[in-house]
Image 1 (cartoon, rainbow, N blue to C red):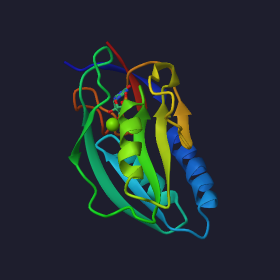
Image 2: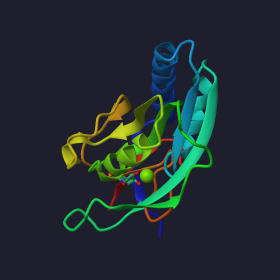
Image 3: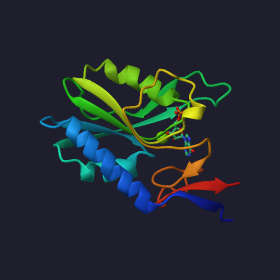
Image 4: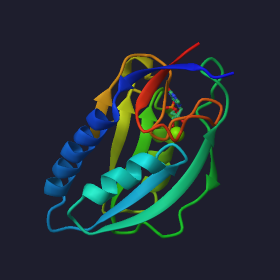
Length: 174
Ligand code: IMP
Ligand code: MG
């Protein structure tokens, strides 16, 4: 049976905001090359839309992670399901995520990736749910939208692997 989905951010709003953030990133990295790391699967739509709008030279790599446990039991341990193809040494790295929730995934990932000696590493997210943050040390450099504590789908985000292909961000009305 189909779930009811309420539009939170329309396709136009999302695309307009991605253009703004891409402009800011392009200015910040002017004269440099940028290595984007897309966090699969959720980050894939956002990564494409962002990358298309960047005016600095861009290279792309992909990583897939899965976290263990739930909010009450999570150990903060994240398993790398698919690692990067390329080394990060001396690159200007920008991690591209769909959403930062508890911050556990990114807190772990940042530590792992810093050990690969990039020139610098920053974090860019489509959505941020700060109310849910457990790992307060996670610093987000670029956020498209800060949203309330609601479960959202679309633009890469899923509910039981569905709805990633919605061109807008919606709230599932359970
Ligand atoms: P964190 O480690 O708690 O920050 O988890 C982030 C991950 O949880 C994201 O990359 C998503 O895969 C998933 N997630 C968190 N909130 C939502 C949501 O509202 N909708 C869909 N996935 C979510
Ligand atoms: Mg994700």
